[in-house]
Amino acid sequence: MYQSPDRGPFFRDVFAHGEFRALWLSYVLSAAGDRLALVALTILVYDRSRSPLLAAVTFAAGFVPYLFGSLLLSGLADRLPRRTVMVTCDLARCVLVGAMLWPRTPVAAMIVLLYAVTLLQPPFDAARSAAVRDMMGGLYPLAVAVLQSTTRVVVVAGSAAGGLVVALLGARPALGADAATFIASALLIQAGVRSRQAAAGAHTANPLSLLLGGARLVFGDPALRTLMCLGWLAAFYEVPEGIAVPYAGRLGGGAVAAGLLIAASQMGAAVAAPLFAKKTAPRARLRWMGPMAVLTCGILLVTFLHPGLVLSMAVFALSNVFAVYQISANTAFVERLPNEKRAQAFGLANAGLVVGQGAAFAIAGALAALVPPSVVVAVSGGLGVIAACGLACSWRRMSPGHGRHTARHLARGAAPARAGARSRGAVALAGHAPGKP
Image 1: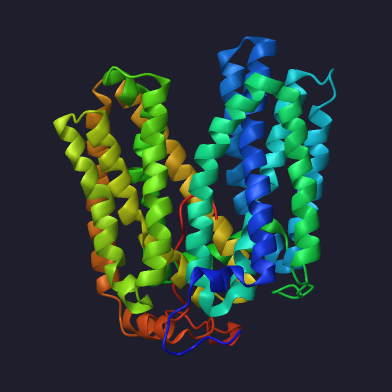
Image 2: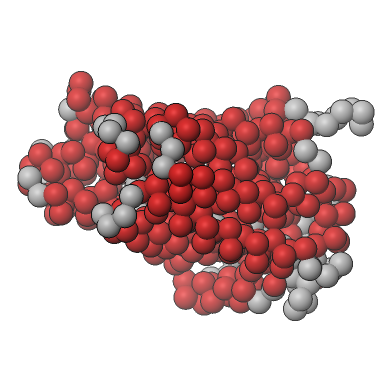
């Protein structure tokens, strides 16, 4: 598509790509369906078992299998055509969710089926993330901003809608709606996304060797490590969402107040991400990445003062406004990773983020029972500041072959590094946006 040299790209340029429109719409449908199903099945399991433990185990399906799927299955999106991986995962998940609709399905079987559904999400996410770079080229940063904002809106709206739909229609219709979204997503991808050859060729490798190869790629280069760790900082600054209920309770609020705290966090980044991607030059985004990471965690120190509900919402929203630095990390990651290992690297980054968030939420929840939740949030922010300062300094010290060279590379909109140019110490840059994508 021709773009006038006297203007930057607009979001209409992103949605002008038919492939991206199809992929974006499929994502909205399937992600909303996932949130709906997770809420519905958690409620259904609790109603049938009256066991808080089983309900918690069910809700954990949104996290635990994702870890193993990220580590072991994401590499499939490099070894197989990415459109094929996405369509296959959607159809398989439709069958699994459909099996939950049988009235006599035991509770244990429903939990196993849900874990299997979640296990197939990482290869789909890795294929989608890699495919977006394939199709969008120089518009990739704007596409990332759109997807990140969409993710945050879907998380809030999908969770709220899940409870409402289950209350009005029941859990099984909600599961049926989720199965339908997978079919719609598969059809959209098959019809709207162009088929491309597998990035890594037709040869096969076992999942463990793919994982080790991805780990050597990511951890063997200092810039890759730095930028991926910048992505993992989300474990520190997303703690407020993990303990929103006790935080709101300490302020004398209930479920509504907790929902407002979560919504404020999500909407802060949802609004800021498109503006940051559109209004900031690529080189400036890379320069500001370290300082913004520090501010993302640092603003949470305000909660040491035990602010009220409105000020807490403002603090959480502002923290996530600064968190849009993740767009820079994500873009650098994709631009510099070799295409044939891109999906496996996404899976490794996702796995680390899931582990970090799970551990952070568990520790924060335990501490919130001993000290005020506002103090827990502030401590998490303080630890995040320490980590972010170290990472920002590391990024600033990068040699011309990493930091400054990459800034020029991205400013020119150059293509990703070729497979043959992956000598040690000059592999590339990586980063990771929290959550999905």
